[in-house]
Length: 477
Image (cartoon, rainbow, N blue to C red; front, side):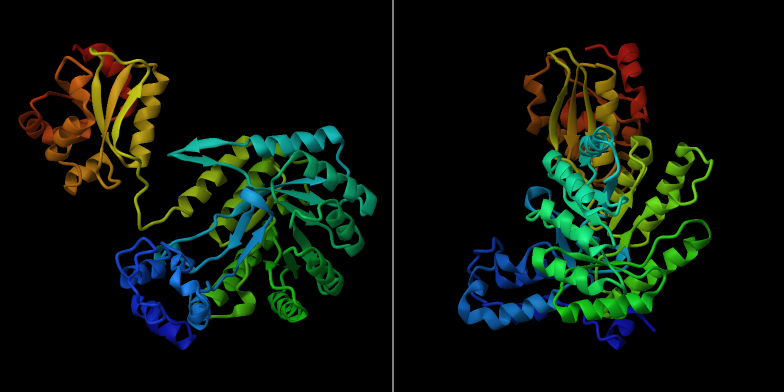
């Protein structure tokens, strides 16, 4: 049975631009920024634009069509918003189970925990480390997203005081963690407008937690460790009770329970995306800090390593939010990078703007190099030039996001494009020489570049880490 047949059997309809076009006003007014309604419909199907960008559709006479479109475009995994303002975090909103099928939206949120029994110094230190975590990665700034405040004391006043301190020191969205409704209410009172994620409703406390979620307008985690039937049943009960924004916690277990953990996450996401099961169609929460259970005499560094491994598995296995205990950069950065790699759009190469870049204080005798606008290539080359304190000009050639070797092989990087870039960047007005250093992997087009541009070509190293030494040894204006 093909994938399309499986979807049809499960009642999942694949949208086409025609399905969307039929419900649009068909005025071709261009207010959405597209040439016509069909072009707009195509971009809607590809999730490149929002249906709300169609101004005529928002008018009262099109209310029915608007409602139909919203229902058609509803993702299998509901999007749940935690927090307020520009730092609010969107969880879920997934359209597909596998990234190669389309793309993933709303990267897995990473939360660092604090407790109501920490000293003020420790609590504030962890908040500060969370907020200051930052790493530049191929044009993206990697950050952490949330603070999870856990009640380990079980005392409402202590929990309230801890939440107040957190709210005072950060605007990051919060997860309030307690199974005691009285304690949870105390925490919510300390952050009445923060719209935190409330953890958690269980078989024992669901009604009290549901009342709090409705009263404070916050999303609610549903927890039934290693019991998917109970989890789905609780979801159904809470939806009927009026709580619409749910996050599912199927339980996170390390060591012997790891197989169950990964199976449960996979089955829930499969049920939502492949089986059309709406009761499973909510964001999933993982708790890698479960790796710290039964720590014993094991060193903290080992526990952080175990937690990081568990987090990586959960990011790959559909978790939409993770609660972490280790707050060291070395244990968090690999998963921040993994998350970024998974949540880039596989349909579009990661590219930077072409043009002329200057490093240091180049003058009329400084070397001129070129590279492609594939982000990873550009930032690697740029980093190597910057770190060596070399004064140089770098021409970034438009290659539709292709690297040097693949660009040459696929005719995305040609001598014509390099010659055009030399003219368009105006580099000829900045240097008195006419020499350009090209990547070693582009040596096969060196003769053509000379012929078309009139510049003398020097074939540089194949690895950009050797650029500084190459310039010292071989560059002469």
